[in-house]
Length: 107
Image 1 (tube, rainbow, N blue to C red):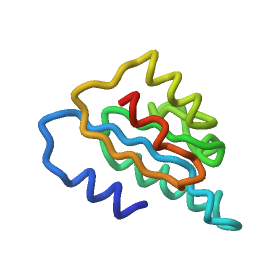
Image 2: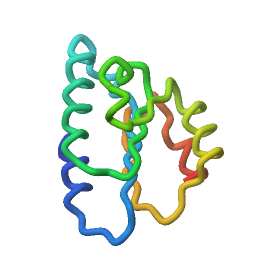
Image 3: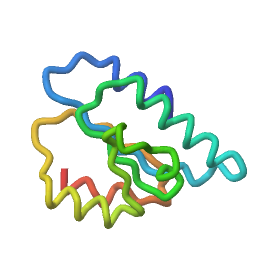
């Protein structure tokens, strides 16, 4: 995940960048710690929008981050319908169990 985010951040872009990351459900016992590390890593970048999907992220995000947290993909989809996304480069990545593919048609 860190490599994907870092690579995405390094791509020169004329449009704003949006990151949508789903919970990494396959991590087991280290899940909490790894989600925290990812949130700290995301803070290093100036993405226009950051959407985190899954309860594992919520404890790590501060209001000052400007990151948006959603419990599940359906909640994300509702938010995307309310605040449309256009003219953005988008990184969409997460465990298949989160079903982020459902959100693609709303981007």
